[in-house]
Amino acid sequence: MKTITFKDSQKVAKAVAAEIIKIVNQKPNAVICIAGGDTPLPVMQELIHEADLKKVDFSKAYFVGLDEWVGLGKETKGSCIQTLQDNLYEPLGLREEQIIFFDGKANDLEKELDRINAFIAKKGLDFILLGIGMNGHIGFNEPGVTIDSEAQVVALDEVTTRVMSKYFDEQLPLTEGITLGFKQILAAKNIVLMATGLKKAEIVKQTVKTKPTNQLPATVLKLAEKEADFYLDEAAASLLEEESL
Ligand code: PGA
Image (cartoon, rainbow, N blue to C red):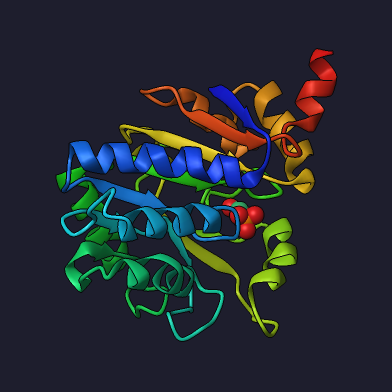
């Protein structure tokens, strides 16, 4: 896994957006997956800006969701689909058929897994942008997760249930997430893991220093077919730099 450090989160966002734009300009019908969460928000703004300037055309691209809280849909502020809809898909003017997203409210989650698995099996992922949880989770692939799996439903880790209140206006009784699995993530043609801010510095250091293990899911990205890039700002990389002095 290659680490690439930029001065601040804006510069990271510009670099990540440039990667995505390059891919879509080369392959207009590329399949792109962008995580929900706070970290990718500046990347989304950058993509919208560049699309407004006609530097890229997303009208043939596909956007796959990385994950969703089981029980939530787009009417809940803080759900993954609401975050992506409001901050990326709608501003880009995407059509419904361009968006492939888990329905966290589906009665039959197995069917939901099958639907997403079938799409990815057919088209693959050209690019995936991932954030990292405070416990090192990737999507809802929590510590201890089965790594040889396609999309799956996973019980939320205790750290995730503690951190999740930052996304929601009220306390929600969430216990599970639905997520792409590592089998799919590792096969993506381009993988970018992004971390910004001082609070991520410790988990970034652990991820870089630790051999692949399902106990720290971000380390599993070291097994990717094509080397994953770890994009950091100086704050998130600060414990790495101290070590290398
Ligand atoms: P964040 O979430 O981008 O909101 O920090 C990352 C994650 O939990 O995967």
